[in-house]
Image (cartoon, rainbow, N blue to C red; front, side, top):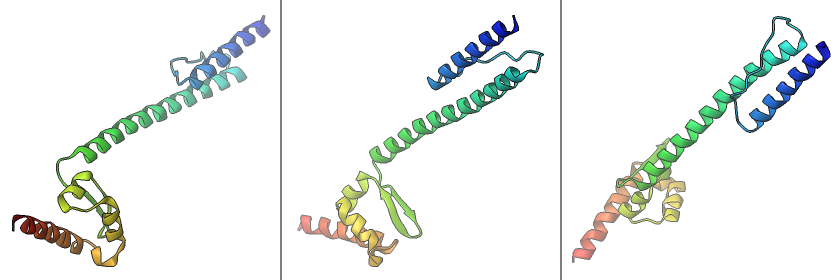
Length: 137
């Protein structure tokens, strides 16, 4: 009789493992008062399942947040420059439009010591102003 009960418990464990593989964390294993090896495995499985669920949910939230950030960054109607240690590490399309550079020109300029911030911003703004003056003349 005990063998049959263990077989049922093992089948439930297999079902729960299959569910987790499909990212279904709803199956929890019963832990009896016997405190036998299957109870230890079931308890450990339940703990692992909860930890994995937390990780998966956190990752999903992070991915949603990252998509929102990328959308806001790329669609902003303002210049966005990400600057670290005085150098541009990223920029949006509006930056290229406002300053009149291609992405390659901006990247090459960032690699050049002469184009460090704020020197680059001053140069870029003056370039845009010079082009505006030339167009009006």
